[in-house]
Amino acid sequence: MNRESVVAEALDLLDDVGLDTVSTRRLAKRLGVEQPSLYYHFRTKRDLLAAMAQAAMAPHADAPLPSSEDDWRVWFLENSRSFRRTLLMRRDGARLHAGSTPTGDLDRIRRKMAFLVTSGVPEREAQMAMLAAGRYTVGCVLEEQADVAQPGSEDLPDDIPTLDHEAAFEAGLALILGGLEQRITASGPATVAPPAI
Image (cartoon, rainbow, N blue to C red; front, top):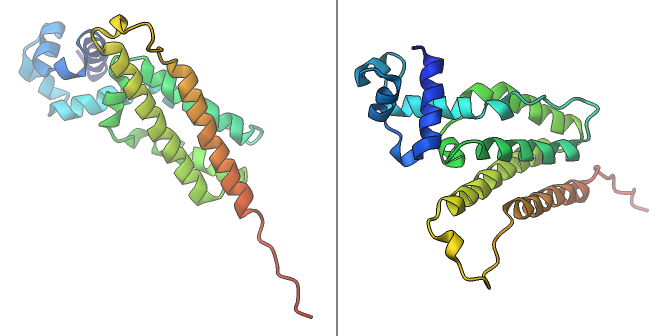
């Protein structure tokens, strides 16, 4: 048993029982070990959850970084879509991620920000857009995963339309990008006032 195998089993446990039911006692039982032996790898349940969150984000964290040839708008949309897909890969993935700090991803975040700034997005706007898109994505997935987990949701009356979560996400994401483009256009290049006559 090593740290990686403990995290992998913990993520499988998450998929089976959901975040509220994940416990070190259940995990130890699945691994066939005594609960105190987990403390060799993780001092607290919080440490375990942080490692689970980091491992769960691997598909997004390992995605290629943008290159100078990329269109920043296309990349901005795809980055958010990749984040959403990764959160949806695990049961309660958004809740697991929402309680974590992306310490292992800071260099990638800096490189993404540098790409946006180099592409002409003002630094402050790039920061706010990335933050807004990230929080929007987590919120959308929280709602989507809660909707799936809601017992009896399949018994709703026929006159209540079901929400197309992906279409709703795409619509909101387009609004964020459109707002960012408007802010960039509005700030425009600095203009010099003509001399007084």
